[in-house]
Image (cartoon, rainbow, N blue to C red; front, top):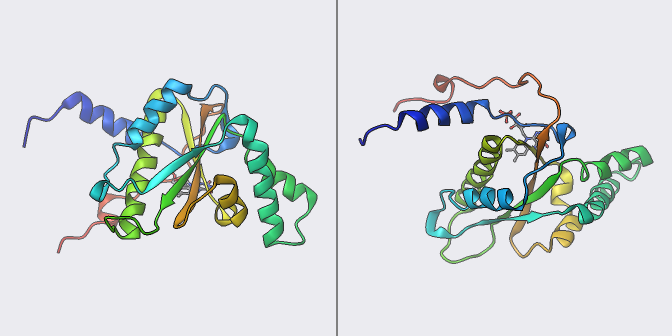
Amino acid sequence: MSEPWPTAWENTQLLITSRHNVSPRRLVEPGPDAQELHSLLALAAAAPDHQQLRPWRFVIVPAARRPELGEVFALALADRDASATAPQMEQAREKALRAPLLMVAVACLGPREPDVPALERMVSLGAAIQNIALGAHALGYGCGLTSGQALSSPRLAELLALGPGETAVCCINLGTVSKHKAASTTRPEPGDFTTTL
Ligand SMILES: Cc1cc2nc3c(=O)[nH]c(=O)nc-3n(C[C@H](O)[C@H](O)[C@H](O)COP(=O)(O)O)c2cc1C
């Protein structure tokens, strides 16, 4: 074992354990600027990636395109529920408009050489998302992941120009936290999820 790096260890512990999902309702301007976003995406590129397949990508949805995303969310709701009311559709639309920065995480699970199982590809995407979330947290921004049935709507696939085997997994919402809240989740103890063979 090489020498531990005390400051890095302490900072890493603090960074990881203090990160919490932030509802996009509490994310306001400013969001990460272009340079910060580039740096966050470079962190995603450092995710573990078996066979260097890079089985994921991110689609940034700039402010000017958010109304289109909102419309997809509303129409996806109407597709699922023909009795959806106008206020419910408006609420669905609004989900696309909240955070200063929004990107959609896309998993690339279709045939690609070399072949790597879908589960391994999802592990890589999860790590890439976590790298972004932790990097944003270190920069002082909040990060909220949002998903839901609209993510699997063909309307969204069309808007994002998803290719064969590509799946939209979740939205990554980034911005300044307007109101800090006590964490609503408790973390499990290592013993809760670890056994020894
Ligand atoms: C793929 C994915 C999708 C998620 N989608 C949502 C969501 O739609 N709404 C939500 O409130 N949280 C969502 N979350 C965040 C989790 O609810 C959150 O991570 C969990 O409650 C643990 O809280 P913590 O991240 O603050 O530790 C999602 C997380 C992941 C990994």
